Amino acid sequence: MPLLQSLTRNHEGIRLLYKHLPLTIHNWAEDAAVATTCVYEQDNGAFWQLSDYLFANQKTITKETLTEKVLEVAKQANLNTEQLKQCIDKRQTISVVQANMAEATNLGFQSTPSFLINGRTVVGALQLQQYKAIIDEMMATAK
Image 1 (spheres, rainbow, N blue to C red):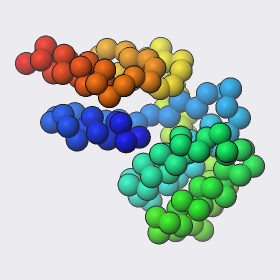
Image 2 (cartoon, rainbow, N blue to C red; image 1 turned 60 degrees about the vertical axis):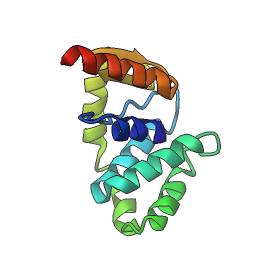
Image 3 (cartoon, one colour; image 1 turned 180 degrees about the horizontal axis):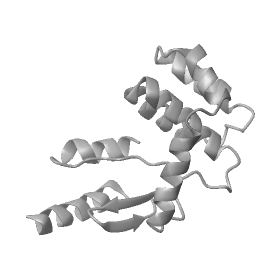
């Protein structure tokens, strides 16, 4: 998510909280959420690396190839791949993913990407300048 990272780098005081909202129309989305959460438990930076990879390559990933792809990225990030595979296979992080989903539902989110910026709901993929304008407006009114 280079766009999100750019926003947090360029705006002092911005805090980014990433929450999973795997949509049922994507048959491997929940598995990906479980896997990326397993990666996050080992290394926050590797979480972003994997998330970026999955979004960039989502058309070539299938439910059957997901774990293999995740382990490839994890190996490049020097993660403990045995521990990671066990976490993925046992779905050890499903409770975190389900809690994220419940939170998103409570906020009224039904699609991705969705954002909550200082209490304002923003749905859809916008351009960097559009996000920047919303954040600048929110920061100005917060002062």
